[in-house]
Structure formats: C-alpha cells, structure tokens
Amino acid sequence: MQDYGSLPTETSVNMDGASRLLRLGRLAQELGTEPVAEEARELAARVSEGRFYVACVGQFKRGKSTLLNALVGHEVVPTGFIPVTAVPTVIRFGDEVHARVRMRDGAWRDIAMIDLKEYVTEELNPENTKAVEGAEVFVPSPLLSSGMCFVDTPGLGSVFTGNTATTQAFIPHIDAALVVVGADPPIAGEELTLVEAVGKEVQDLILVINKADRTTDPERAAAAKFTREILEKQLHRQMGEVFEVSAAERMEDRGPLRDWDKLLASLHCLVEDSGRNLVHAACDRGLQRLSEQLLAIISEDRDALQRPIEESERRIELMRETINEAERSMRELDYLFMAELHRISDLFGERHKRFFASAWTESETEFGEELPSVPLGFGPHYRRRVMHLVQEISRRRVMPWLKPEQEEGERQYRAVAFRFVEMGNSFLKKLVDAGLSELTRMPHALDPEEGFRVRSSFTFEKFLSTADPPSPLRWLADVFLPLVGARRVITNEAREFLRYLLEINSARVQNDVLNRIQESRDRLQIEIRKLLHEISRIAVQALDRARKVKEEGTPAVQSAIERLNGLERDVSALV
Image (cartoon, rainbow, N blue to C red; front, side):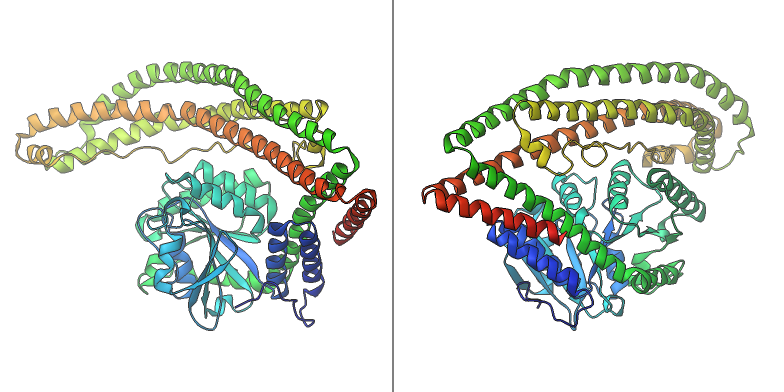
C-alpha cells in the first residue's frame, strides 16, 4: 500500500513536481488546511509513481463498468442493470487483486473484493449514505503496468442526482477520458456537457460505442458520425476514430472482435506517447488549483490580523446579511427567468402548432396514397409493414423541419444562457461594491470565460419512431379476423400512430430548450451560493485564528503577519 505521507524516492523522474506538491502540502498544514494538504500529498504520490487517470465517463447504463472489466481482464468492479456506481473507483496496477475504500474521515480501509459492492454500488450504498470518498482496486493487468489507471465514474442522468454531482466533482482529477456512448441515443445533453467540461481540461479523449452486439451496422455508423460531429463542433478540435465494441462479448470471449484490438492499441499508444506528459499536466493543474485556495486563505488571515476584531465581526455580520440578501435577490430573479421561459415556450409552441397543422394534413394524404402499395399477407406481418410506412412518412416530414428548429433552439438557448451569466456576474460585482471584496480573490469568480460561463448542451436524441407492440389479444385478432376487417383496424391504428409520431417528435425542440435553460440556471445559482458560503467560511475561520493571536499581544500579531507573508511567497514560488 502507498504511504501518502512518505517522501517520493530521489530516482523518480517526476521528483520536481512531486517535491513541489509535498512542499505545498506542508504549507497547507501550517495554515491548518488539512483537506488541501491531504490532496497535495495524494497527488504527489501518484506523480512520483507516474500514475495518470483515464476516467470512463458517460450516461448510466452505457456499460462503463463492464468495459473496464473487459479491458483489465478481470471482473473487479460491479456491474448490473440499474445505475450501479455510486462513488469513483480507481483501478490501478497491483501484484494481486485486492481493494480498499476511503471513508470521509480520510482513513483507508482494506476490504475483500466480494465486499466492494457494499461500498460503491447504488443498490447497497444509495446516494453514498456510507460516506465513502472513493475506492481503489488493484489488479495485475499488463495494460496498467506502466502507470495508467482507469476510473469508473457514476453515470450521468440517473434518478440519483448525487451520482452526477460526484462525477462532476471528479473532473479536476481527470487526465484523459474514455467517453462511452451508445447508438440509442448516441450522446445525450448531460453527457455532452460533461465531455465539454472534461475536454476543456484534457486533450486525450477516446470515443467508444459499447453494446455493439445490440445494434445494427447502420445504427452504429450513424451514431459514430453524429458523436464525432457534435463533439468536434463543441470542442473546436478534431476527434479520433469512434471504436465500436461489445464489452459483454469480450468478457465472455465470444462474438466478433470488431474494434477491440484497435481500442487496446489506442490505449497502449496513450501510455507510450502521452503518459509522461499527462502526469506532468496533472501536477501543474493540481499546483495551480491548490495554490489558489491557499492564497485566498492567507490573504483573509492577514487582513483579519490587521483590522480590529470588532471590525472583522461587523464585516462577517455584514457578509451574512449580504448573503441572505443575495438569496432574496436570486429569488427575485426567478420572475425574470419565468418570463423568459414563457416567452420561449410560446415562441416554439406557435412554431410547432403551425408545423403540425400542415404536416398532419399532408402526411395523412401521403399515407392514403401509399397504403395500397403495402403488400397484403399474414395479419401481424401486414401490421408491421403498415407501421413501418407510418414511421417513414413521419420521418420524411419531421427531420427536414427539425434542422432549422434545432438552429433556432440553439440561438434562443445561447441568448438566454448568456443573459443569465451576465446577470450572475453583475450580481457578484454588486456584492464586491457592497463590501464583499473577498470575491475578487476567489479564482475566476468574476471571469465569464473561466467562471460561470454556461455552454449550450442542446442536442437531439434519436428520432422517436418505435411503435408499441400489439397486445396478445390484438395479435390474435390480426391473425383470425377476416383480412378486410383486420386491415381496417390496423389502418385506423396506424393513422393514430402517425399523428402521435408527428406530435411527439415535433414538440421535442420546445421541451429540450426549456429543459436546458432550467438546468443551466440551476447550475448558475448553485455555483453562486457555493462561492458565497465558501467566502463566509474562510472569513469566520480567519477571525477565530486572529482572536487567538491577538490575545498574545502585538508582537505575536506582527510575527503572524510576517509568517503569512513568507507563506504567501513560498506558495507563489511553487507555482
């Protein structure tokens, strides 16, 4: 087991970065900031060992855990048919298979492999009620022997909201990513938002379509093309090949290989060509992130020592009042938000209404003209042919119309998102002017590019075109009714299905835009609240420390200020 408090060996090729991180950890300890110190020590350990994290990210039920098991050649992380992973699980090289979990108090606990699911699965640790910070699985896989570590992250978009938050919080620790998508739908809105966030931090993204055994060749080809195009558009760079695999087949050693060997070759190339650089980049990102936190704490501690205790108490009270006022102000902004939602809902509602009125009339006429060309035959077969005709007609009508609607939806979303970002930053600026100058010290607090920029995650899911299978009684009726009677029933149900397809697919623009706006606005408010409460916490801790020092007299205060100045110089020099 790695001792995270020990100094890395002098022979390490990453000794310089690891040494700086350990020094940063000791400075954090001097400041009494143990969480920063612990993170610095952990990062120093993996930098010194040349370990880098390749996170497996994507929507839940994509088969991410099964894919990782297949890649390392051992069934080490739990899999299942419900959202499984509750906490990030790191899979790293070890001489034998074993596991450990880290609890919220920072202590590591060795566990039997059979007990891993008790800590990392949603079923046995729902919403992470057992307070597990993370898990590590050691496995003797040749693929991991050169420093690469896989990370099994909780899936996005499940009913368990804590899972998504856990995955988002792990983003700063990711060095590269396996982006696992499917063919139905190829990539959902929340997945795209996550991949965007990861893509801003790291360059190496490996795209995988899993469960290839459950889809047709045309479906996978369309999904691969869509995934590559949408990511290139959002990330403004070229994406590599999309690998089509079936992890379940590989675990059972059956079926065609498809792109499996190419996926393995891509991972080996990542180790050989980028591994060292990924470790250095992880070190630099960690130093930057942790030093910013320490500099904000140092500045607040020094200010608390230099001003009278009574003034600090008044400032904290004012800060609390300002935060309470901020909560009221954000609630007042809800009225503006609701007005924007109503405006966009009405806009797309009218556009949808106009389209549906003409599309239904034209589609019904087209159905009547093409129905006689459907071959007659066995009742259930005839039903399938008629329903297929309905799907094709609805697709021909809706898909050309969806493209300009998508562009208009993107434009409306960006306009509203930008407006709320500007309102959020303007709101924070007013708090600075009102006395919360600490905001200017918080990294990127008022920077629209690095702070509260909300990017569009507007995408379309697969065209909804699946007809519900007929009930057993309906199937028997199709078989035994006279053909003329069966045809009449099937034709009437097909017309209703055609109407449903036109209605549901043409309404998706309005629903998707409204959902994206709601999610973006919620994220913005969460970030503002988190920032304000973090400022308050730092100020209260600084005041508590200042009280103790001032009780010892002026020399002690001066000595403490000089010490903070020295710590500030040391932290800045490390970065």
